[in-house]
Each structure stands twice: as structure tokens, then as C-alpha cells.
Length: 392
Image (cartoon, rainbow, N blue to C red):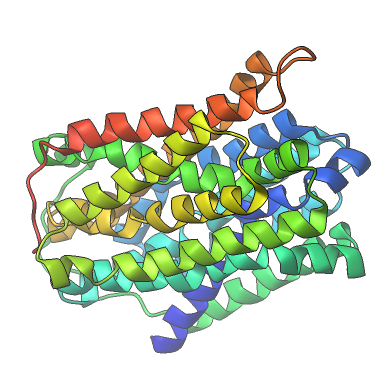
């Protein structure tokens, strides 16, 4: 099982890469495929939306057939097939379809790991194990920064993504051969998503869960690239370096969140404080959209670091979910989180277009985007204030 978890983690590294790599490819995709920022915002959002839509069937599959077959089959068909389609793309539509298929392929990998953690480890360890998976998996976020820019220069973007299609198939085969399904719960109670929807405690967590990851994912996955290019005149290499800094901050943030609930004796206030600081950094960028380049990168790093509370929020929500609904519970919460990112990512394209124009300062559309993300976080935090703290 240790090797199986290692390969699931490798699959999650790939998933993190795919959700974030478009920022570095902004210019080459515009040149070779005709995909502008709005097209890529839609494609990025489609990855998150298909990923989210797959969570309900993935949750059912985890409870009924186990993580081994669920993760291996979808990663092979969606991850491998979608990456191959991307490598062969000739229009923005091809990019969007490929990203949607890749989203389906990546949808079970993290949840398969979380399902194993929920079923085979002590509840108090869930946040730490989940944060470790997120932290290590975020190396894929880093691979989608400067290393991707170097690979594109050395090999070409089509060849690079084609190689990742082959890697997806290899990882899927490894997961099939090494992951062991947790034992079934004897005499398990029957249940459905309706049982989760009826839990009032979860409804106070859902709004923040829907918005907490959107700023870090949306900016790192797409908008950092256009912002740095348009506002600061950054080259692809400089964009790669800046996104690498933000990616590193996200890795450190995931690891930092992991043990804090046990160290401080609270989950609620760790989550609240981190997201409040993330909202503050976004507000600074909204009010001051043209800081120096270094200051901008630092602010993006702050957003990345404090925007990684997802595993802690998942642990908080999972503490209210009964064991026989573990698979459906964690995937339903993941649906809300990733679905929120997808909806907001799709919305940012039209929002950007509605503000941008020849007579509008180049910073104005980005200031609106930063303010949009800040307000979303604040709204989620207001509802979350009424949630009951829980560590078990």
C-alpha cells in the first residue's frame, strides 16, 4: 500500500500540473492555436468544472468498487487521452475539450488517497495526512512553472504535453497494480448524498469551501501570466520564475497548515485566520494593482501560502461525516471546492473582458479581478464564523 500511495501522490502531482500549466503557455498557445486569455480562462474553468462534476460518480465508485479501479481507469482514459488531445490541438476548442477530459482523468486521484486516509487511519491524522498529500502533490504546481518553460523551449510544447500523456498511462498502470482497496465495512448502513445535504453543520462550511481555493488556483493557474506580461512587461522566462515562487509558497503553505489544528487545538480559527490574511493580500492588489514587480510577486506568494487551507477545511467537514459515507462525503466536499474554482475561473474571463478596453488603464481589469476574489473570500468567512469548531 505504501507504493500505491506513492503512485497516487505521483498522480496528484500530475493533477496539480494540469490545473496550473496554462499560465506559462499563454503566449505560445496564442501564437500557435489562437487561444487568447479569455479562451484559456474558459479552458481552465472547464478543467475544474469537469473535475467537479465527476466527484459524485467518483464518490459512489470509491464506496462501491474502491480506489484502485476508480483512480486507475479514469487517469488512463481522461488524463492520458486528454493530454494526447491537447498535444494535437489546432484550435481553442480543442484546448478546451482536452482540458475538460483531463479534468475527468484527474478527478479521482486525490480523493482515492483521502478515502484511504479516512478509512484506514485515525481521524486526528486526517488533516496532517491530507496536507502532506497536498504539499507533495503541489510539486506538480512547481513543474508547471519554470521547468515547463524550459521544457517548452528545449522540446516544444506539443512534445512536452505528449510525453505527459504517456506518463499518465504509466502511472495509471502502476496504481492498478499496487493500490489495495480498504476492507468493506461489515453491515454498513445505507446512505446517500441526501444524508450529507441534511447536515446543518456542513452548510456553514460549504461557502468558504467553495471560495477558499479559488484565488490561489485562479491566479496561479492562469491570471498571473497575463497580469505580469501586460502590467510589468514580463517575458515567458520571468513569468515562469514568478509562478515558481508562488508555487513554492503554495507547497510550504500546505505543509504549514497540516499540523496546526493539533498544535493550536483548533481547526476553525486556523482556517479563519489564514483565509483572512489571503483576503487582505488580494485587497492590497485590488487597491494597488501596480506595485513593483517584486512586491507583486511577494503578494502572489502570500496568496498562495495562505490560500492552501483546503485540506484543513476538508478535515473540518469530514469530522461531521459518518464512516459509511466517507467516499461520498469527501468527494462531495471536493466537488463544492473544485466546482467553485471552475465557476469563478469561467466567470473571470467575461469579467476581464467587460472591464478591459483601449481607453481603460491596463491595470484596471486586474484590479477588478483581485477585488472579486477578495470579496468572495470575505463572504465565505462571514458564514464560516457561525460554524462549530471540531477536532475529532
